[in-house]
Length: 294
Length: 274
Ligand SMILES: Nc1ncnc2c1ncn2[C@@H]1O[C@H](COP(=O)(O)OP(=O)(O)OP(=O)(O)O)[C@@H](O)[C@H]1O
Ligand SMILES: [Mg+2]
Image 1 (cartoon, helix red, strand yellow):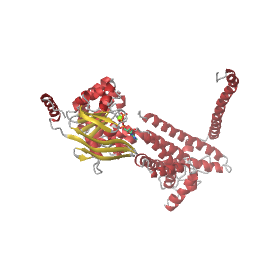
Image 2 (cartoon, rainbow over the protein chains, first blue to last red):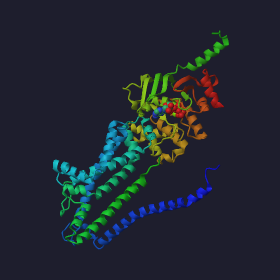
Image 3 (spheres, helix red, strand yellow):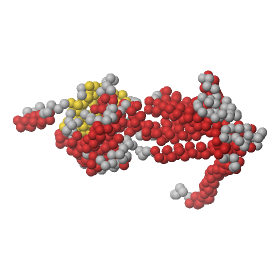
Image 4 (cartoon, each protein chain N blue to C red):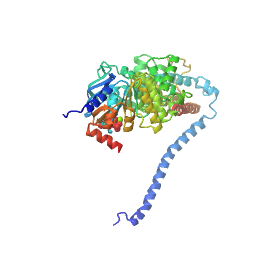
């Protein structure tokens, strides 16, 4: 007796093929949805910003007059912020990752820290703002300056760097460490000469992705108290500052009062997108260029 | 015991004499070594003396503890957290299992070559210069000399002398393995541990490594794990047969292959020869 009845199989064939086709189209539609929304978004922003992006817009200081207003202050503020966030996250993030991967392996403490880093990644950014406000701006009495914002932002993106660096370090084959230890190298020499160079591309990619996130965050800095209208340009980490997304936020809020502010916001978004795109490209370039063969 | 005839006695004596003739020095003395991976005992009461300027082969079926033993000799097993060890391993008369023995110190004297070639993703030059640099040699001229001497020592100089700055990953498997030997030689070790160094190589590369081992033993002592009976017979002076974490038989290579005293050794050797 045959278990597979040809007639039965034929009867079911139609439904099976239909379900197959249906699945494919469903997944295509899901993809399309996201894509369409993105296109509409970019189209609207670009359309609104047309005619507003020029040298004046980029190099002028902020002004209440839409015709004169420029975003040099926000650009410099963003750069200063990155100048704090990049080294702080890099040192703390890579340091933590090295500790967890190379030293604390398999201990209870490691499990505890690991869980908390994952938890930290899920904490809403506004909460980091409150932390920054209480600790850096108030308790350390820094005020709402670049340093306070930068430290807050650094904490916010720290989990990203830690996790990316951990993965990069874990991907370094054990036999390379063994080869180094086998020659009498200490742990630190092995980390410095073998593990870090081999995991650098992954670590840098993580750092740049973290910076891309930091550059677009608004909430924590608004909480810290970035002024809505700041005209002087910042020229140090102890100056008050504003950044591109916060500028977008205030112009959008005020566009009810002055209609042109909406165009300024759109133009700023375009600049921000260009910066983001550039940073992601750098991340990809680094990854491709320095990727080592193992 | 039956009385030996005159000639037999003479023959035995001559053989023994020849074997222990030069009063060879012991490099490694292993005393009652036991090792556990968690609850599983991988080495049981190992007692083994390894002699200077000899090639000592370690043979035995898969999983019998060969790698574990050789990795205990430079304390590489410590990288595995669950490992527990008891007993003594005397290297040049000092117990390396003693807490006060610095493992970096030990590994500066005892080099290791692994089963799979594992060069660093660096240039050929940097691979060989790695060890000396680790130990603080910075002088370019000295480093150059060490690199050349080590590469010559590993019989690979002629093949790579024009491409020292190229990445080591561009070499063939056999060349990579000889580079790894050169890398180990660069710290001028007293002993080199080799764990199946030719198992990933083609016959010609294998032959080159074997010749190299013969050459090297003039200056250093070599302990080599191998699955290849012919290889053990060809290149080693003494052979230890491991089984289930124990040393079944340990004697000079000629007698273990021509006249094994333990039935299990005989079974293993003949099984392999087919
Ligand atoms: N990291 C480890 N954790 C737990 N057990 C291990 C570990 N490494 C080896 N063992 C066990 O110890 C025993 C000896 O292993 P070992 O690698 O020394 O064998 P071997 O003689 O080198 O075998 P092969 O010829 O296959 O390389 C085996 O039973 C193995 O399962
Ligand atoms: Mg093995």
